[in-house]
Image (cartoon, rainbow, N blue to C red; front, side, top):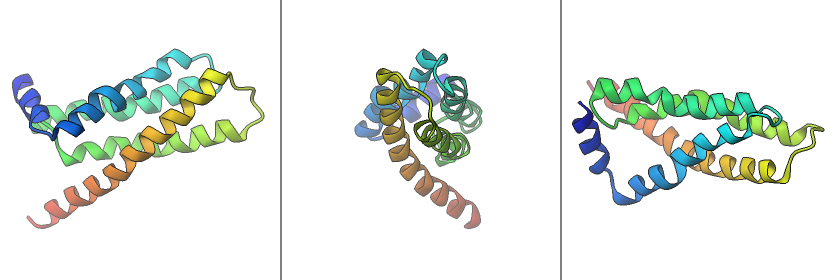
Length: 129
């Protein structure tokens, strides 16, 4: 099963593999470094949750699937609002944390744009059956 998942990952276009390994996964693990910051625990839980919930999907489908968009939508859309609320609050943000939140927001909004399309394609493939 792990070999099937690895092969499925390696079958993705090179730019997607790079996007996942270099940007998306590390960026969404990084909130662990900011747990002591305003809403840090919630942001970390939503950020990591959006990835962790993909594990059962990968195991069930034995690889990558358009259905992997749904955990991102479920966790990262609320996280976007939490991050915006942090910026809108009166809380003093450490410069590094503020810069990281902007980066997290940009990366996850780009991902969510792909995820909306992937979810649409997944639903369309289901209704065609």
